[in-house]
Image (cartoon, rainbow over all chains, first blue to last red):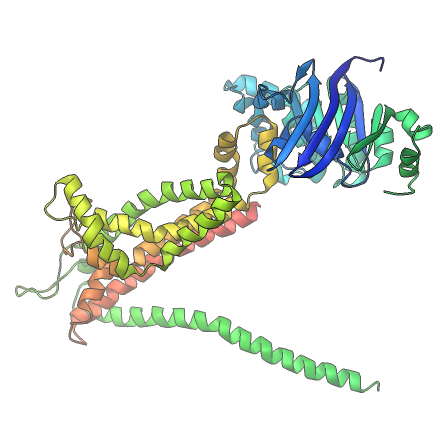
Length: 253
Length: 301
């Protein structure tokens, strides 16, 4: 890879109890690019995504082996401060999940957790995060109303703003558009394009057209293995592996 | 052939209507019982006020229906006693109930939870007379020793015992409310770098607050209405309580003690119904508030 690498994974393996979910995943995720992870359900792409901010720690009986270097530092090491890791590696979930609080309090939640009390500073952070998530103009007059009154697409962008408010370096997205309507999905995809200037983005998606549209690199997962990883253009036009071709042409999946 | 189909369907409809009627009757029975109790208490209780001024009943504290110098019917002391014992019980139940519920839903391993939750719920199966007995032989003497009292049968004793009885409701329903908070909220909080404690205090508990409040109100309803335990373990002193360490006699205890011995048709007899009616109103308000919180919680979700 001829680009600066943000996350360097070597031989990552995950077990849930006695069942191995990931087999020897080695992948280098470039800085300020969108990397899409595709593959059929249960192929391990979401499991891999959750390794990158150690959310798998929360699954009882889950074990992770191998090494994942974020800016040269092994995040799988027991010495890693998980709180700090999750501040640096933000996450957006499949189902938008704003807290039952106001728009403002949703975005301010992370900064407050990390000790920012000053009101003017918080207001600044919230506005900045909402602007980056291209939601500011729609909600600037209703910062105090409940986040649950926003539309689905707005709620998902609010969740992105909430993740951005702690100033992460990497943004993980787990099928962020799978429950959105086409118009909201298009907005979200535009937003992802804008965000990669500042952030390294890893997105899991079921939707191959989406992967083709938004990503620079694509990894194809199958049965817990990384079958192929290359530039998105290469994956979708001339994949090296037969399995990859079969999947992207819709012969299985 | 064509004709037979509507006929079957009509017969089916008739059966369905019958079933609906039977089920509706079951539903309305509880409303009828409620209305019946309400009317009985109101009708019997109101007759007391032919002899006892309503104002005296509500605003004075001395309850002495058998006094030779003229009967007194003030419910102040027993209302104060009921509130003292109930609020004392809630002062223990609320923090303890939330603590146990939070541990069960957020921190306990599945196996511990499977044992602990039924165990807490089993507390509700202890007959109240047994709890009262424990109050007389164990908790009361302990309170007496702790505070240097001649007698441990006090409002505090009642509060401790009512906590045991209100806790199953408080824990079980609070735990349900906490578990009803979507897991996604917890994940979102943890993914932002919050630790489990911050997640509990800042996300899960606020989201579950309406349900927890409802749980506490229902637990309080249980405490207000409890009779046998407080009758046995709080000392039965029909005087205005001076604090948690004084013996008290609650509204429920008064009715239970006096109604068996009072001659029918006297002012005393009807006054006890009026006390019952007052108790009914208090319980009704508490349950209504609980219900209001439950409905509000549902709307917010």
